[in-house]
Length: 84
Image (tube, rainbow, N blue to C red; front, side, top):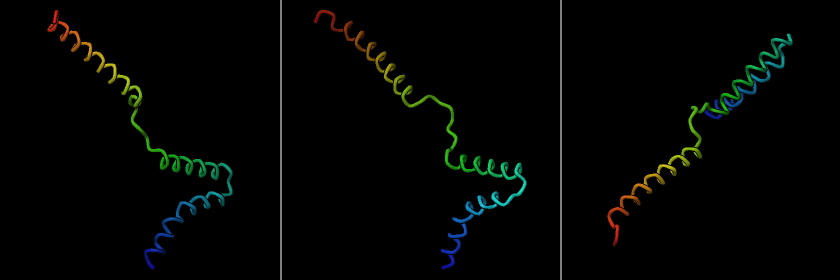
């Protein structure tokens, strides 16, 4: 029973924070409050990803490297069986 009420309190906390902005009378302060909340929600929803190559470009680069390696192997094989 205690954990259930604690869960309700934790779940209701963000809603309470949103409701508190509604009651700020000064327009500039109220808008600043809403802006802070938007930033907090955006940060929670979308974790920052490090700037790296996309998976498609990594795949493309690895395919190109494999092709270069294959060409080297084929060249060396042609030299071995030259006349077989």
